[in-house]
Image (cartoon, rainbow, N blue to C red; front, side, top):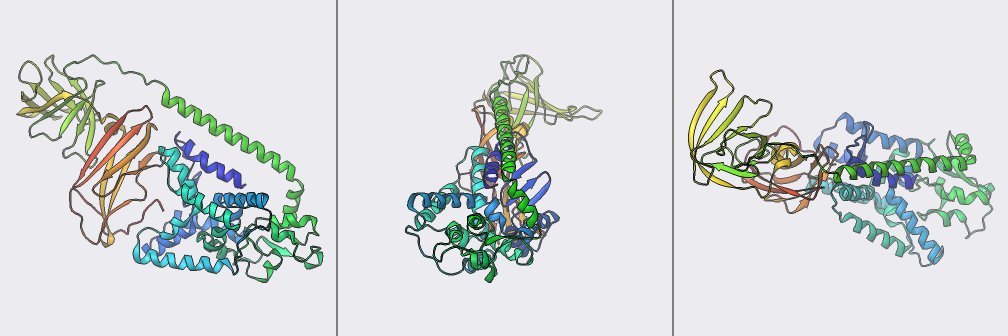
Length: 534
């Protein structure tokens, strides 16, 4: 089960790039076939601080708590990928050094230290931060994030180095430090299971025990260094129900077993273990082959040549940049396939806009349609001479689609007429890149960057600007976004304009720049800020 979950969170971001969106997310927020799952700790922090709760949040947090209510802390031992890596590390150590070689003695109950970390993290979040601090201590989320970043945009997250360092420390000490003494994600799960005394748990029958004192196989098998024989004497807050002690005891009297209303059903499954192992192996094989097939198809989609659109050559206009005095845009890009890109100016918040163009004579005059859904509204730029040239005279005629047709005509001077070196073609027409500044309650100003990727052509996006240092954006199946969101200012209005740049790298090897000068603020001061990433 652990291997299957660990493998699934490697495959999921790969298939997400193929626009498969039935499964997506990580261990902080995950959606499976429309059912939301969420880290209860993340929901608790944000809901208490912002006094805001949605139905999805309630369902997402309730599902893992219900699992703990009936099955105990099986998330930690059956699902958590970091738990798998930690257990494997301890297993390798035992094989290399022996069971009793140079282990650091750790006394005391780990749950109380976890609770201390839990409380301090909550206090720090409420006083000093808008980002839930305890979520940054989620090892399973860091594991899933690493593969989301890597397969989403070829970006290596530093979280993998922290995970490896932690595993190395546990290997040296011979103890699972994180899971037993620090992990705050397990606190709410452990508390939830205490509400049901008939849950799945390990019980001990002293009369059946035949182990010699000091040679208990169950204690040697427990990766958390617990004493399974005495679990029933405490609140059993630390046991993860992994079952290793129960397996170790099967040849020593079967004094340890799981106690649950479904004990007979579980016993039947144990007898048919080989059959279930075969079924699981077949299912895992199908999942792997499906992932490889989708990945291969996606690779084919990216490397196959794009069909070339046929269009009559216009040597005076194809792949050119044009701009005029007192114009709405900074300049226009005329792509050879007839696509028009309006860069800069006072277009809506994305900073550039797509449209269509066509030649109207053999001198370089051009018709521009800014909204292809309303072709009756357009502008015609008439060359007043033999050909386009910087400094040349142009007559600009506007048509608003009314019965009268022409609405205005003005004379302008050409500022730029030059070859197009670097285009915003895809960014402006299909990606709809945006940089939006929003004001929330308590004067919190958030810069939200988004780029649509409907055809899955983007490989990576790097951003930089006044409000951010160089960093990567994250893919979320249908679009790219900055995560977590960028907090520009708290408590006061930021200085405008805010400049932002993007480098959009595509799978076919080319890249496109996108520049933003954000001067408008969307006012949502009646709403509390909540980062959707958490």
